[in-house]
Length: 197
Length: 197
Image 1: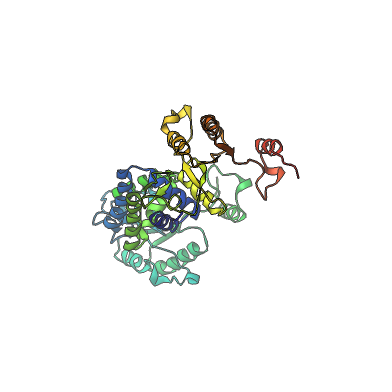
Image 2: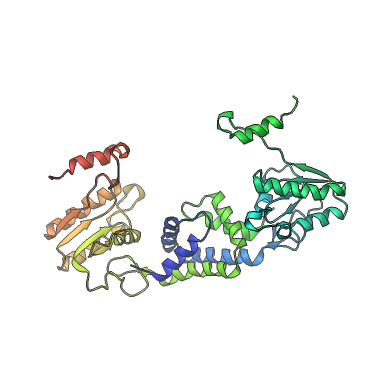
């Protein structure tokens, strides 16, 4: 039993991250059971999001407007820039509701193995923003993995000569975490970064 | 940071089965990184599948043609009908490549709790097919759960007076399975349905 348009739908769903062959097939069959307007709605949500969203020319995160809502917000603290790997990280940070500075989205991390060098991510744009002068602190919030650490070190070496304060987000045991289930490297970081009480 | 079209996309993805809030968000961000033609391709695959696929008027499984490829295949054995819950089950059965009869898709199983009675699934259509005369055996292949068993019993009682042979697919230990990991009910069925060697 081969139904061309069903197989095409399943194969396109299967290309999405985390959607295996079985899940794609299950989703495709489910979509056939939806109302016409719900399928149209999903299809137009796809093209509409892709059409109307573009990177903010300042920070590189996503926006439908000229500037993103954070860069456009005059109540945010323009003297602090938090550097993150990608646009999703901005939404994670914003959920915290505590950070009031701006962001800089790199659009990736340095990864010589994958052929991603300094010119492939938005490092030059970050340096330009800092050189323009109003920035007093850059918080490096790339992930605590090999690429994230290497990227943070690389950017730190470029920023230091500019006289700006460069900080790195803390690594340690998550709140609510348990020593038993924390990996050795996190535990080592937690000891290394211990603070006076 | 609220981006309307991104949130709309994530919320529509989130309505799909097995796609949680986090996965929907991750997929939505991923879709923004795809090429325009890939997003258009996925969107049109959705509407195209929904537009061109309809239930086969004979067996109730999905088809783009007038009859499904199985009902239209004159080499299939029209004297045997395998009754399944939904159209996906047909594709599972077809993977086996051994069954040469036809199918009947119920489009659900009896479930008084959910208000699904005999008139809500394609039971009358099955009786009609059997009454037309050329059918010698009906294999009940609904799932071995409460609703599937109840549906099989219900259909069996309606078919018996018509003089057709009614069989139920076997339940037991899966091939490659292990007694240690098989649940008690399956094990009970495996003993109950034991065969002479």
